[in-house]
Length: 297
Image (cartoon, rainbow, N blue to C red; front, side):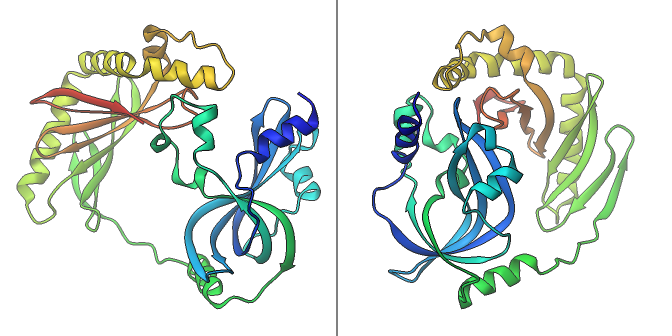
């Protein structure tokens, strides 16, 4: 594909209207493929202000520009591109990303499957000023860099099977580790902090799952494969790869990362996706009472 056609393809993802923004950049510069012949370079941002309305947008996103493939390393792209010093406020003109553009390139992938930051993208057309003064963005920057005092976790349980379980009283769960078919996995036990009986029930439920881990591992993988292999093939085809993943392949490729468990015996298994879904975590939900219920990203 010729360079102009590639640039047209990139720009069609963004609104035609160019607006002026004040943008507070974040901490890092990234690069990523958007076409087999072209790369895009991204600088993350923490917030921006639309100067026409003075509206403040809070939330992670990216300033994005296309660069040549041979200049796609972060260092080279930083030189080629307008992007951008970390923690700096810029006044710039830019075009906003059109979320619906994904419906053309990935018709079978629901928009809700993408991380929110994926949609919060601006394509700068002109940098007007670096180091711009803006009170609200300066406050965001101060809050971002302000050191957070670490909370001292309280170890309340040492379990023979689950090891050391650490309570997070604010989020109301215990965090620990367990062994699953010879591999160490993370464990989250959701509890009612004020009801110690729920602590015991959550531990017992997790141990019940571990006691039959060979059966559950096979069952969960088969369920995930039956529910999600077709979607994995859709993602592969939309990414210009062959969509020939079988359910057997799917079940084999996913890697267990951990579990969460409630005191009522409801659980979620978390799997690494082997890049079948661009790094999204696969979640399989179920309970001892109802069996496996849903597999999703």
